Every structure is written in C-alpha cells, then in structure tokens.
Length: 328
Image (tube, rainbow, N blue to C red; front, top):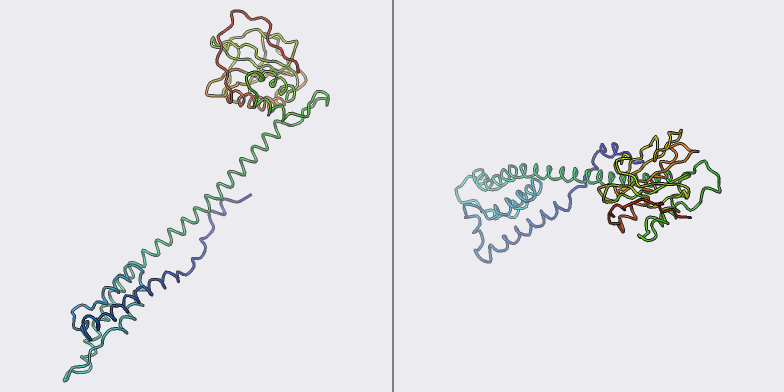
C-alpha cells in the first residue's frame, strides 16, 4: 500500500541547473549588443556612441537584468564593457582622470545590473519554488487518485465476496450460478423481472424471499416470492418500517406470525430517491446476520433492473386475492 504521509513529506527533488535559460538569455543579449556595435559605423560613424550621454548598451543591460536576473545581467555587463568604444586620452589629460572618466559607464551598468538583477533573481527563485511545490502537490494528487481507485476496487471485491460467500446449507439447495442469476436480474425487463427475481433469490438466499411492490395507495402487494406455500395479503406501508436506502432491518414478526428465534429481514427497494417496495427474507435455519450479504446483493440487482426500466406506480387493487407465486 502506498504511504500517503511519506509521499507528502518527501523533500522536493533537486532542481536541475537552469543552464538552458541562462544560455538563451545571454545569447539573445549578446546578439543585440553585436547588432548595436555593428550598426554604429554603418549609420552613425565610429565613436558616436561614446559621445552620447547614455550609451545604447544601457537598453540591452536593463533588458537582460529585468528578464533573466542577476547572472545574465552581470554577464552582459562584462560583454558590453569589452565591446564598448574606448575613447583615446585627450592631450593634457591625466591618465588616472582618463581611466576614471571611461570607467563611469561600466560602473553604472554594474550597479544597475546588481540592483535590478538581485530583485529579479528573488522573483525567479520564488517562481521556481512555486513550481516545485506544484509538482509535489501534483504527485500527491496522483497518489491519492491511485489510492482511491485501489480502495474502490478493494471495496468492490469485498462486496462481491460478501454477496457470494458460502452459506451453511446443503449443496443441493445452494446453486452455483449466483453471479449469473444476479446479472440476469439486473438486466431483466418488466416482463421477465419477476422470474429473474425468483431465480436470483433462490440462488443467493435460503428460506423464503418475497418482493413487495408499493402502489399509489401506499399498500405493499406481492410482486414475486420464492415460497410457493406463502400467503402474503396486501399490506400497508405503515405495517412495515420502511428503512432508508440500502439498510437491512430485522423484523420480530412478519404478516402477523409469532416471534421466532430468527426474525425476518426487511430491505427497501429504492432505485431512485423514494422507496418503491421492500424485500422480505426469512430462514428458520440461519441467523439474520448471515442473510444480510445475499439480501443486499439481491436488492442492488433489483434496483439496477428497475432503474434501467422503471415500473409505474400502480393503483391499489380493489381486493387482494392469491399473490403471484412463481416457480423456478
């Protein structure tokens, strides 16, 4: 099992040196410097840039520092210093004064590149930290998604195993095609639903199982049952505590019969938001807890069938005769 806590606490992977970004920034700035230096003798004449108050190389240096940060800015300052037009020392000027005069522009470039580059470099670091955090959170999200899929598959396998677990009954009474019967019930249409229900109920549960359909008058009438000898008259919905969707309730008595050691179980059949009927299951030879998985599987298969092809609510019949009893 993947440990999510370990994945969340893993230190970010070391960032690969951004060599490509540095090279792109430096090469692009170098091309601009070369273009400006080549354009000077063609359009303005030799030494024209040196006579200006602000050297055109300022534009390239500022762009490099603002766009690419400190290291590209300082590299471009060094390249611009080597490419600039160094004026000759005038007659009578002290050599120290001459060197100080020509060093003013490179010194200004250096200071500007340092100030702007340091600020920009901090923004670049923050952006890289945000990108690393996004990558880490994306990895955690993928791990969580994989874990959810794994847990969903585990729950599905557990439900399938619980629905098809062996019950302590003889091999003659326990069919081996439970999954096939449930699948037929889930895909049954309105005409074959009752027969498919009887087959699936007999395959999944021992004892008596009945499906009671809820009509418009709020009465529960038998739709199908597995016990040919059962006699289930029309019941009111108030006679049985309709549970919430998917809940299984043990009943102390069913249809007025005396309380016994193994009470009947009641499960709501609710393909939508409202219950449309109930399932009743009872076996004198088995505890109620052993019937829960099969009853739940049977209820889900019937709900799938009703959801595919729902039955309209029918009006209450004027009288209740013999219920519909189906043979296997």
